Image (cartoon, rainbow, N blue to C red; front, side, top):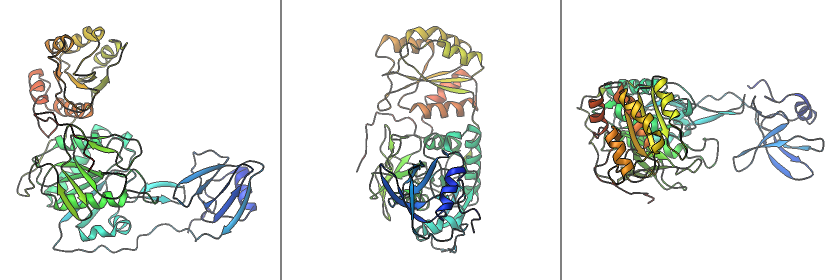
Length: 445
């Protein structure tokens, strides 16, 4: 039982709620001169504004209602007694289904409301997952664990290494696929990191997230997770992928190659898109439809090679009008080992940072050029600016996304600091990050 019936409320607002005899979970109507709102009284998070009352509307969204002297409250219905969540579902094993390991790193996917704080938190024990998405038991035998639980903006190269190591352990133990729930904001970075770290993959590794938590009616969590498990257990390819909604409705999910995907919208459920490539497949309910036949086949006899070292002293720098070479000089002076430029157009940078770039390259700090345009590939031979940068020793990033080039350079620098070897590796397609020809695809169907 939750001991504090008005968790998070303090002072005048708490006294107001106590006066009206309400508790968390009760249905209430709040009236002010300017509006009336009705919903479920929710806990107030510790860091939220003190003068607000939190209400969950019938559409699933939470709102904060500012408490004023003219605020009126009516208790409409008694809420159910709030208890700590305990999953009731039992894990079942079906010898005819593949075995899929779920390794949680955090994020909105498969999250629940903590009624002690009002916060949404990931609950990714095996029973937790099966209770909110029991249909995945029809697809695979599930084992789940929480590796760590962080906001994805706090991801680091060191944590990429830990995820890769844990995924490798599960694959060496013989699972048929691995699913990695992850926050969406930096999921494409982690996908790229795993694509480079897990060489010679025998089975799929699938990153999955959700834009909306499972307590909301519009949540994409269950469908995304179900699709990810299906891909991990049954897809014919053995690559690192990202599985997310393919459109705003609940029609299908898309399977993106981990080195060719980016989050393209802050909040839409179909935020993820394959860039300079087609998605590998789409999942329509229980059916996997192959879209792109250019993939590495699943083969459990293949021996996984773990190369999970990353050099964190690499910077991603966006060029812009008026940019100063001081930015590059600062990185050199601070001992950075590599720089990825997000240049303009076909791969250009302002002439007034050339001297600083020369200095970096002369001090054997590789500089890799990518484009802010995202779609298309750089071609530094077209204009004199690009040719000058090539002559200086800047490495062309082909059609790599800037963040993928960043992760790749981190991975390469952990293997070698020889400039010739770095250039050779950066220009080699290792994990599908470079397409031999430009592909324009905004696949939507």
